[in-house]
Every structure is written in structure tokens, then in C-alpha cells.
Image (cartoon, rainbow, N blue to C red; front, side, top):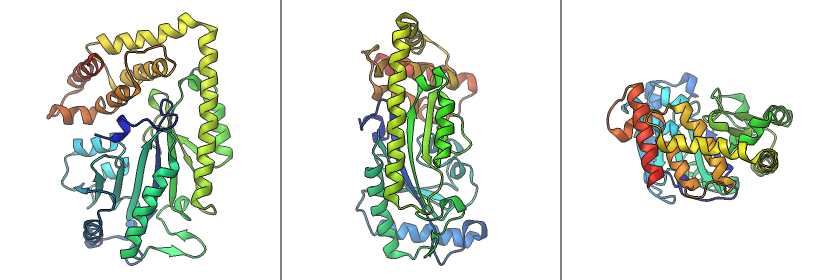
Length: 340
């Protein structure tokens, strides 16, 4: 299970994780829209050889998307190890994933390869150093599609340049409750920063969690993008902290009641849906962060957040479950984790 669950990075109670993703394409293989099955197989084989020759970042296990069960693929997506697009693809594709589950290399997604590293809290520089190291290893064995004017060439024009996406997952319940989240979204859009849901593009912001990332990578060096996202996220975090205190002081009993009701439901409910789980976890996470609830920690909430999602829950159970069965099993798992 991911090291993100127990690691305590800077601002980890609000910033769930920081991620860097690099999009790369090989110069001698057609882009994804023009690739044949032979090209896809060739790319996978070449990447397997490159990774096998270098273990500088630990053992990376290859998972074959083509033969993998749909539930296993969705579970990898729920743990943010692969993208929703890769989970849904029926083409020859795969991913290299490390044992700690904070590093992965996706093969034959929108681009030939996508290298990503994740760390708890605000740690974009650390994530970039890992990705850059792997990128250097691969580039020694393969020529990338690169243009002196446009930088790294990618399938989507928004990834031209550095090919880098820097993103931070933030838990922002106070901004949502006060209605200030709308102005945050508008302000970010004006400075070339996008705010999306928990699984990135086209996903919903459930559990008051939002992914903040750069919109484009052309015309900026990696360090500038990282500094920009880092600075914006810290401003958002400061605003969130201020609003939390204001809401608490306005009505202490109402504030604590909301948190303890959700805590009570997590601890005692026999049936919990995915949406309810995210909502209750958001409230309890807020309470733990503010010191209102003291007998559970953020690491346990992180673990519940991952394990309680539908595909991962079925993977743990070892069988396919109907919706009602999942809701019952989810409630059992949550009670067990909290009581433990």
C-alpha cells in the first residue's frame, strides 16, 4: 500500500499529496494516434529492457493493462497510480509501479510514456527530482521527440514545452462551506492554473478535495512552474486555515456537531455509500486537523479513503460485489479501521 498513507509531508493535513508528471514520446515511434499494435508492443518491450537494466529507484514491477481485470485497473486508478484514460483503454498498454506505490511510469497512454512521482504534503521539488532522475535514465537509452522551439513534443498541445504537470491535492472544506471556492477557481484560471476534481480532468471534486495544477508547460522552465504552483497552493492553504478558525469561532457547537455527527456515522453506520464516505471523511479530517477529534489520525483517514473506494474494496474482498454489498462491506471496513 502507498507510502502516502503514512508519510507526513509539509502541510499534510490539508495537502494530501504533491505529484509531478512528465509526458514523453520516442522520436522513432509514431505518436499514439498513429501507432500500430506492433509499435505498441515494441514500445513496451523497449521500456521493459530499459527498466530492467537500471534499478536506481528500486524494483519497478510491470503490470499489463491488456490482460488485467477491470477491477484491478480501476483500483490502480483509485490509488492514483494510473490515469482514468489508461484504466479504460483496450489497447496494448501497461505501467511500471514501485513497491511503495508513489512512483509509476505509464506506457501507451495519451503519450508514449508518462513518468509520475507522488509525495505527501507540499513536496513538488522532491517529486520532480525523482521524475527527472528516471527521465535521464530513459533518455540515455532512447531519443525523445524534441523541437528546439517547442521543447518536448506531445500528443496534446497543452503539454508542449517541458511536458510537465505539477499538481497538489488539497482538502478545502472551509472554502467550500463559505462559498469562497468559486473565487479561488476564477483567480487560478487567470494565472494559468487549473483546479480539477480528485482524479484530474473531467472528474468531480468529491469530499472537498481539489487538484491544483499548471495549465500549460510551454515557455516556462520546470523550476518556474513548480515555484508557481507551490506558491499558489500555500496561499490557498493559508486562506483555508483562516476560514476554518472563523467558522469555528462563529458557532463552536454547530461546527463541532457537524464533525462529531460524521464521526459517529463512520463509527456506527452499517451501510455507507461512496459519496457518503467521502463527505463524512471530509468532516472528520477537518476535525482531526483542528484538534477537535484526538483519537484518530490523518494516516488512518488516508487509509480509509483509499481502501473504501469501490474497486479497491472489491479487490480486498477477493470477489466482485453488488452495490449494496459494497456499501455494507465499506461500513465494516471503516468501523474496523477506526476501532483498531
